Image (cartoon, rainbow, N blue to C red):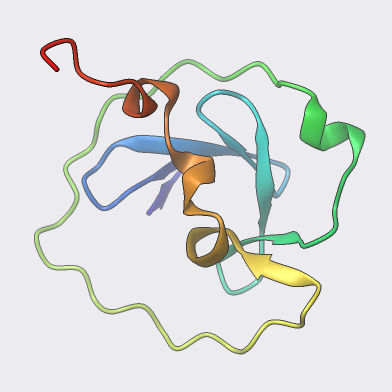
Amino acid sequence: MIQGIFIYDTRGEWIAWLDNGDVYTCDGFYAGYLADDNRIVRHRNHNSRKDRERHACPQSPIRIRPPSRIPLPPMFAELPWQIIDCFEDEPEVFTRISDLRPDWED
């Protein structure tokens, strides 16, 4: 879900933000760009300075409460080989560092 420049997951947690069509994770790293059909995509072999630089994140927004019923997404057209859908092929991009650490109790 997109609200303003912020992108949220289905639980209402902030996972990314937009900057002129480019999508950056909460940690400030480049994730891809917003395609015309509202998918976050990137070039498969893309390796530029933008990928390695960390961008300053805007102030963290508040958590939103998504609607309890969300319509199914439309059927997307097939992507060319050189373009990948970030949520299908690289979902770990949106994993926060705190999600990767084991719990203190373990």
